[in-house]
Amino acid sequence: MHEMSLAKSMYEIVEETARKNNARKVKSVQFELGALSHAEPDALSFAFEVVAHGTIAEGARFEIIRIPGKAWCVPCGRTVDLPRLGAPCPECGGHQLAVTQGDEMRIASIEII
Ligand SMILES: [Zn+2]
Image (cartoon, rainbow, N blue to C red):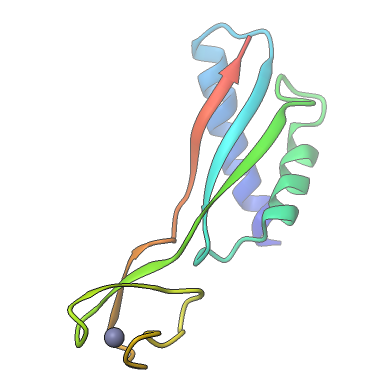
């Protein structure tokens, strides 16, 4: 399960940050997830809860910020919306697209106490 390994690597960052800051508890974690990344938000939230169980991050509020997909279309010469990877340009129907936004999978902020 892809989300589980993602949650694990994410948890390592959370734990390291908490340890460096002598935190007693992780209160919340905000995570940026691009629409073009291959992770399901619900599955990721669940996986993080499982990974955090019995740790400093147990019970932390886990928020996912969805980042919409965008790509640069070469024929159009501008940035267009891209709902998913492999989709054509909504303006010209072409596939000469370079993803500029939406493949994010990163921790935006961690709140500790
Ligand atoms: Zn186009």
